[in-house]
Amino acid sequence: MVSVLLVAVIAAGIAAVLWPPSGLPFMGTRSPLGPSNGYGPDIHSPLFYRSVRLPFGDAKTNFVLGFRPHSEFRFDFDIQNRGRSPLRIEGVVPPGVGWVGMMRVRRMLFQHNPQTFSFVGATPEPLTIAPGRSGVVVAVIETGGPCRAHFSRNSGESFDSIRLRYSYRGRERTESYSLPVVVGMVCGNPKRWVDDAVSG
Image (cartoon, rainbow, N blue to C red; front, side, top):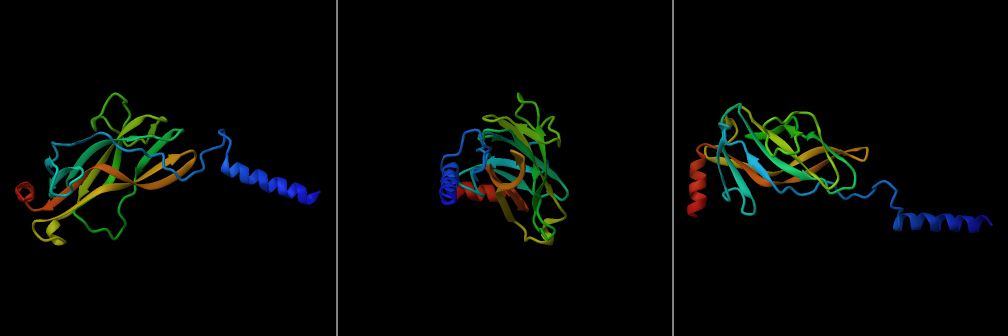
């Protein structure tokens, strides 16, 4: 009798894993972070040079920045919630203590007006995105001291992903998120980089 019950319990457990009831919480590893379809740069930033297809990447639009010490550049983009529950975007994971670079995404702002695709009016208050909807977030890039302290003149660096902090179905997570753009910065005059890329 005991063995029959044990077999029944094991069979029920296997069935629950293979065919979970629709009412059970989402337990898979699939991310609720969907792709981004829109973006925009802060063209009034002292760092912004222009948007091009090159030189930092071929598949995405590039925001080309020229380095200035202790300055900021913001760009906004949307994130889709492809999950079935609300998604709360809480911020970005900043670089570690030993980080050395020209620029870093130090913090994020969030656009809580669903009718506005802009960083104007965005606040630090985390953003909750309903299932199947999109929300606008603003990445804030900061520069440190003189870039030539660590980099040679006319050298450059770029990134096209950031590590987001978010909550979903009661769990806090961090995940690398692919941006819809490449952000590149030049230690020197960015015009030379762009001209060489366009003429090359």
